[in-house]
Length: 287
Image (cartoon, rainbow, N blue to C red; front, side, top):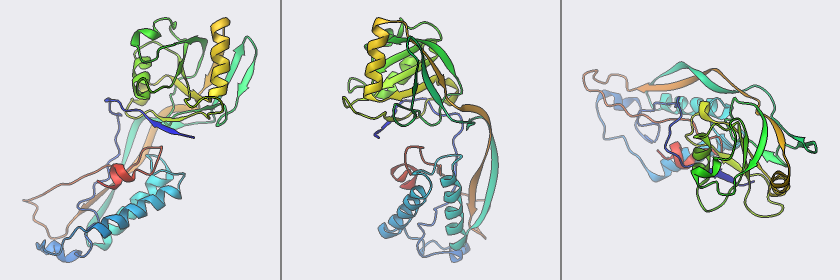
């Protein structure tokens, strides 16, 4: 299953921050650095690689990611806090609560109601981005031949479900943004690759959770069949995303050198969570 990332400019409402002052790339100095000396603080290629490999291992052991509100993030917190403590830092774990955050409440479902009922299979016929939308929908499917044109969605009624084809004509994030600007109930995106291509796993990127409509990708075969049917008949589908919104508790990691002057504070920070689609090695892992 191919993963496609949405490159858009809107930021998610709540960003997880793991504040790591110089992290544990500090391969030699520990508590001694707190006395004011900095000569022992070194950053080396092998030291960086060690931590990248550790974060990769954490992702591999936790469903392939270290995403917010996932086990891989909690393990990342433990790793970073432990390395900072070993390097002589005073570490505080700060618990924060985010409101109106995506919460997976149950399984998703996707079915065609009319004209001929069909239950689609998750992971075979369709896939859902993470986080998914908190909006469930039952609506009429309308084919949008040019999903890269914002005017192409004009024929979809409010609450309707647009059926589009993922293509190289524009980034999948552009299609998502154009669809988000319309009063759609849902968006079905057919995978590239021709017959037999599985549903792509798309990353909604920075599109805020609360602005997403019910969005699914479809396998090339299931999508082509639905496309042909929607062009010749009235097609109604039902989508249950399984997502809702609520409060989510997470942890920041704060670290400070003991004995440092409170009058001269240099603050360095980074987010510690990865995207859901991967372990974030070239994202926050390398930064």
